[in-house]
Image (tube, rainbow, N blue to C red; front, top):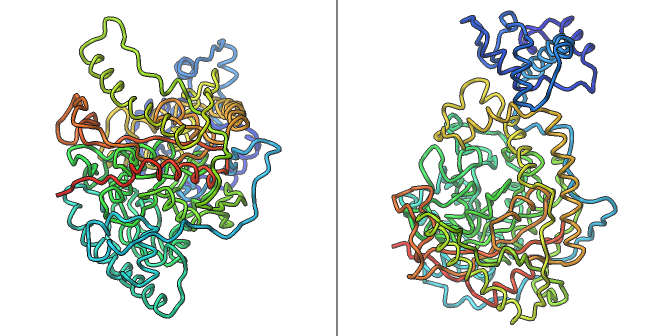
Amino acid sequence: MNEQLGGLDRRRFLGVCSAMGLGQTLLPGVLWGMAAQASSSPQSRVEGAGIDHDHLVAITPEMIDAAAAIAAVKLTAEQKAMMLDGLKKQRESVLVIRSMKIPNSVAPAFVFDPVPAGMKLETERRPMRMSRAPEVKALVGNENALAFASVRELAELVKTKKVSSVELTKMYLARLRKYDPKLHFVITLTEERALRHAAEADKEIAAGRYRGPLHGIPWGAKDLLAVKGYRTTWGAGGFEQQQFDYDATVVQRLDATGAVLVAKLSMGALAQGPIWFGGMTRSPWNTKQPSSGSSAGSASAVGSGCVGFAIGTETLGSISSPSTRCGATGLRPTFGFVPRTGAMALTWTMDKIGPICRSVEDCALVMSAIYGPDRQDRSVKNAAFNWDAEFDWKKLRVGYLKSEFDPPEIQKNATEEQTRDHARQAYDAKYAQAALPSLQKMGAKLVEVKLPKGYHFGDIQPVLEAEAAAAFDELTLSGRDGLLTDQGPNEWPNTFRVARFYSAVDYIQAQRARTLAMEAMEKIFVEVDVVVTPSFGAQLTATNLTGHPAVIVPNGARGEDAPLPDHRDDGHPQNVGGPGTPVSLTFLGGLYSDARLAAFARAYQEATGFHRLHPKLD
């Protein structure tokens, strides 16, 4: 016990716990940080725990004053004096919990549930209905066409034995090696595993044991999914050799379909941006531009025809943004649809795992394989994803966020830079606006809807940073955050430090505000079944907080007349857009309506064909 609790004896430990009581809040991070900084003893820093108990300085009224200023709380001298003993006990309790060194894989005791009271979920699972078999004869012997083929097309080739899984696997492994020096999307090739599984797939198919549309199809995993026998780096310096002795649930489920894992793909360090410890992942449409992130390698590899499909994750844009930048199709499922067991946790109440593919139907086929409870991730609902490619989407009520499609207004007395920004926004808005008549031509009757006002989605967002700081608390306390590649004011090391000043009370208040926001958002989907919107703007934060699903589809490529980026330096974070780069459109749906949402998005995709555009890599 003494060793486990970092030097606290049993009597002291029990005394602290008894004094605190179950409902007591912990010491706000601000006071802890100030006390740590105030300690002058060179022996005060100890590995792991951060502060040696014997060298903690006393908490003073002056510390409380400074902390109260940050927390926007007013306190009298009498109140501060009364708080001192309680704050000391809170600090001791913090130390006890901190000494447990809880791993990233352990979730909090509470479970986020986006489903409003009284909402009934569809639980009956029905057989999947794919689109009719595509014509695939022209793909045989044409490597470039084969590399960019959809999962549906690849499945038909493998099922009919026109192409073997081993052939596909070797082709994609070769392409990953060929284009990685340009795109920096591979962290680890899983070649031995892949060739073994591909050979097994071919043997089973030859024996008549065909498992389904993913059987024998090569895929790539964002490198936050644990794969036994291979490193899982989370894209972060200091974790380069990390390994787990198990497979993530999603990996197990894809193995069960006969899919073939060929690579662990890059991700921004600890799920932020395109920069990882090996460099910056690039867009295949313009290799001088970042791919965006954090599902950087997944989107880049799909967009460049280097895997059949990939798995990404999203907390706040990490499927949407790189899919847009790389010309891929992404499905961000309803929160609680896909188990996250064996995946790195960033924010327990927002993390979602979903497919990144070349078509909406591909996403649906992958989603069909990975969703549903696993008896480990307690957030996952017993809801059904019943894919039906022939679903009669015309009976769906379709809304659109009119204000998001309106052309941007130029500010009076705009600076030269603001004028250039306006020109780029106005140019891109034309692509989104063109989608509306296309949808009407398909037969969709568009109804204007509005995002709920007054719910302050952006001000709820600090719950993300607070949970992320908790997920990587020891990284901050140990100083190992200095190993991360990026150290700027908007990067994780600084974000985690700032989050320690966000009190438990304010976190809970934000979650209460989130409940109101969830109820307000769900009212939209009482009026309509699908909402069409540009891929960014206020809806991205809102729907990630409320758990609603999204399908992101390519919506064309910018022409040669497109305004140039302000910054065209290689790898510059603002080197975005410009001639020949893709744009996207997003479809939103009600909670757990992912299958019918995908059916509608597929109809748009088939009508427009933008997903068949591919970058020129050579």
